[in-house]
View 1 (cartoon, one colour):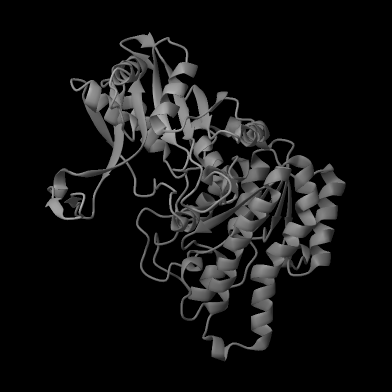
View 2 (tube, helix red, strand yellow; view 1 turned 60 degrees about the vertical axis):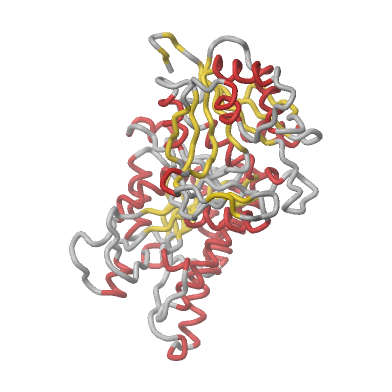
Length: 473
C-alpha cells in the first residue's frame, strides 16, 4: 500500500502466546484442532492469503516454536518471515514483535491467533483505515447491557449501551504511532494494559483511534465451550474461497489434472464435469445411468479408480454428488428404502474416501463431498436424508483432520435449494427463479477443489433464499 504516495509495507503479526489454561489443555489452545486445522493455522491462513499482507510474523508461546515451524513448512506459508518467542504478557509480546520488525515505516496489524474466523473484509478495512489514521481498532456493538461494578460487585454505573462496543482484533497501526506509544509507556512504572489500542489511547491521547466494524463470528477461543462453538461456526459459516480471476487461470490450474466425478450424468455433477473438462482437466464421470456404477458398491468404486489411473496414472480430485432423497415419515419407510438411502447417501462417501485416499495422497489432492442445508436440523419427512447429510459433514471434518498430515484436503459443499433432476423428482416443478442454478454450484465446487482449504463446509446460497424447507440438491 501507499501512504501519501510513498510505498509502505504491510506486516501482520499473529499473536499466539497463550497457553490454554482455562481450556484445561497441556498444549497452547492455538494448537488445538478445529475443522481440520489448528486454530493457529486457520488464523494464519486468513492473514497469509490476504492480498494486502506482505509479511507475517508469528509470536508463539515459549517451548512450542517447533510446532509452528512445522505448520509453516508443511503449509508452505512463504509470507512468514519470522517465528519469535512471545512474552509473559500481551504487551511484552507486542514489544518483542516490534523489536523483530525493521525500523522502516510500515503498517503493522496485530491479530490474536485464537480468533480463527476473522474475515477478509475486516483485514481489508483495517489497512484501508491506516491510509487516513494512525491507529485502528475492530469492534462490534454490544447486544447486552454493560454493568460497571466496584470491588464488592456492587453496581457503580450502567453506561449507555448505544455508545459501547465489544473489542476484537485485529488492531492496526502505523509503525511510528505504536512505537511512540510503547516508548512513552516504557517510562511509566505503573504501565499495564490488556491490548495495544489502550497503549495508544493512554500515552498518545491526541492520536485518534478509528473503529472498523467487526463481526460476531470473529470470536475468541478462550473457554472450553468456545472450542465447540468455533467448530460449529466453521460448519455453519459461508466461507470466502479464493476464486481464479479468469478462464486462463482455471486452465493453468486444471490442465493435466485428473478429476473423478461420481453422480456425473446430470445436475451438479454433470456441470462440474463439463466445466472442468472445458478448462483442460482429464475428467472421468461415473453414474448408475451412464456407466452402471453403483456408488454403494466398493467394487464399483475400485473399478472407477482403476479406470482413471489406467488412463492418466493419477487422480487429483474426487467429487461425489450422488445421492437419493427419500421422503415420508420414518414409520412408513420400508426396510429396503432405509438400507438404500443409507448406503447411497452415507456409506458411498466412506467407500470413496477409502478407495481413493492412496491416489489423492500421491498427488496432494482433494476430496469434495456434498451435504444439504437440512444437515443443521433434522426435519419431519426427511429423517434419513437429513441424518445422512449431517453424518457427511462430520465425515468431512474427521477426514480433513486424519489426512492433513498427508496433504489431502477434504471439504463439503452445502448448496441451498438447487435446480436438479433429483429435486424435481422429489418436489415437482417449483417457481422459476426460486432455486440456485447448478452451474453456480459447479463453479464454486471447482474453486473449493483448487483452494488450500480443508475441513470446511462451503455454503452456496441465493441472495434471497425462497421459502421454508430449503433442502439442497
